[in-house]
Image (tube, one colour):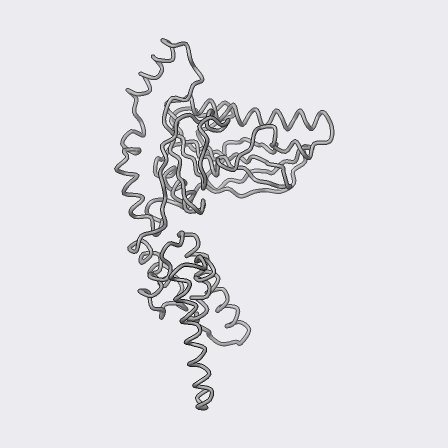
Length: 329
């Protein structure tokens, strides 16, 4: 298992260490950037989070004292003590963005854990921490962020597939156990808030379910009409080359799309217009047909939005042929 644990600043990096102990690359994993003020298109979800009281109870000393008393009374010191929040969305990136912003809003030292797959069938866990965390865990109040827990395997799956000798296997297994130990200590610490993300269901009887304990699912649905309007308004303000688009049309045709897909479609259209501008040495704005095609690529083939875009493209093509026949182009 690839594992390195250091106290870093918010723009820190973490080394990806192979099972043979050699550093292969550096993975940037910033905790900075997303806050409730910088997120676009999450207004209704942010309001629901506030109503949950997660920020009101961020430092509940009375609860901490009660938990410590119960640990003594029952003689259990490593059981999960709180209820983790599982951010769940069809496309996990939407859940990840809201989860990271929530962690930053809590304002506590944060540990972020994610699993990567450097080789087929092999998983490597990456850990990043902000100041206020040591190898032994959180010094005081803290937040543990777990990305994509529905894709995590068992500790035995972490990077052992590329180990070729007993020493490498021992090092990989030791790293996996340290990560699991950190997770379990955080789960049993009443001063630590656990936030996790997933795109699928989590079996409460699975290993990860047992480690984290009870989870309250916070569904992150596709953006509402108002949230899509906010996203397109933001994109059209940011990218002047698409400012002439019909925002009402874009809001309607992007219904049901995850936020990250809307941003991706817009980015692809703007990038293409930029490359055309460079190639032709003249300003080329974003073409309506091209942007709609990018949106259609993210919509289900049987959706009303896809059919409308398809029919619109046919109509535009017919109009172009008629203009050509009239000698207008």
